[in-house]
Image (tube, rainbow, N blue to C red; front, side):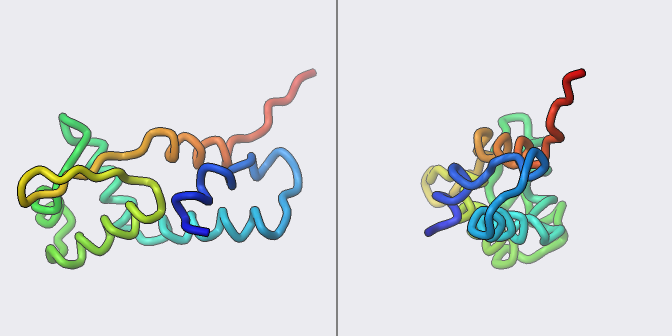
Length: 115
């Protein structure tokens, strides 16, 4: 199963009860993608853009990485379902996928306690 498919179905709250080994493996794969500091920076830089999108040329200098390296990180984030892309001429612009980011946030949310 591709990560893109996993993230939409895998993200029960980790903290509201026990999850099975398959759910744990799916979540671990997604968090492994985010385990690379440069990928977290990529997400942050894209979110910080006025249009909430960026192409590789806008990311290389702030990241201090080569174009091929930044392109690789963008590809991994795209394949994980965290980014969407749109080709415009020779450039590809990347945007966050809000639903996927929200699913990750919800997976780590503490259960609400009612007393």
